[in-house]
Image (cartoon, rainbow, N blue to C red; front, side, top):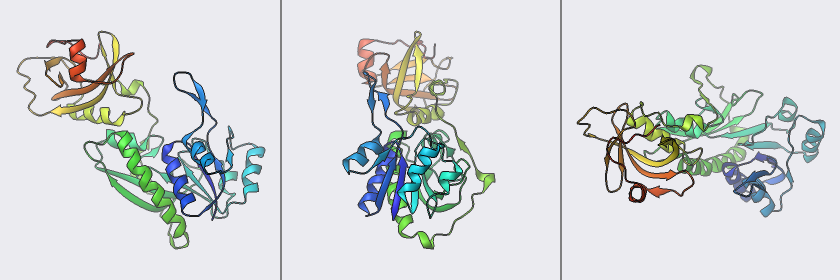
Amino acid sequence: MRVIFAGTPPFAAAALEALADAGHDIVLVLTQPDRPAGRGMKLTPSAVKQAALARGLPVYQPASLKTPESQAELAAAGADVMVVAAYGLLLPQAVLDLPRLGCLNIHASLLPRWRGAAPIQRAILAGDVETGVTIMQMDAGLDTGAMLTKAAVPIRETDTAASLHDALATVGAAAIVAALANYPALLPETQDEAQATYAAKLSKDEAKLDWSRSAEALVRAVRAYNPAPGAWTLLDGEPLKIWAAQAVAGAGRERSCEPGEVLRAEADQLVVACGGGALAVQELQPAGSRRMSAAAFLAGRPLAPGARFGR
């Protein structure tokens, strides 16, 4: 098929590579304009742009798809289908109507659960035991189109947003190749609006740990916000990121303590009181420093029982 591909991050790049490897004619690749990144804030191409250029594919980076110029560029490509994966720009109806077979989206959840910008992280935060990928026909709504295929992926207790992202990227790449191969036989299924949930975009503020919550909820937060924006707390008024933690069974809270209070500083972890249970912090990162084990942190900054996180 003649395919326009629209995507920006590594999740989308995996699908672009798979479609090209499957022999599809990628007539145009859409991706977000280059953005400043890194300490030097140098303009950096997206993962999709890098993958496209490596294969010699034509790249187009409009700031909007609502202009006559951008829509004329897409129409000139003469695509059979447009495949979209984490592109980051809204597709107006005029664009949705351009390809002969319409526009297909690779969405990282089992729709209608977790429509929106952050389905991977929201699934972990909610304690879901599985998620997956849905290939759907795009319409003017936010991830509301008819579903063509689904592929489930279990969420392991050790999964972070990073590891789950990589698993879903692989599954999504295979799913879109299979969907295009079987397209005439696929039967669209309307989403059940009563089952829909919304995966709101993440913010740094919400990644601040609330020690009044249970240890299990805090562990999910640490996993969900890894790698971005990173779960964090305060220690003596300074931000401190927490990258790895576990709930402690039978934490031994033998005395009255407040959420966020250090119960014990052990050889390889800090045990901190929560609203329910206790959290064993195993990897952390002080402001302006590198990620380090709890042992390395304690070697440079001993914490006695009674020290408090969160303030």
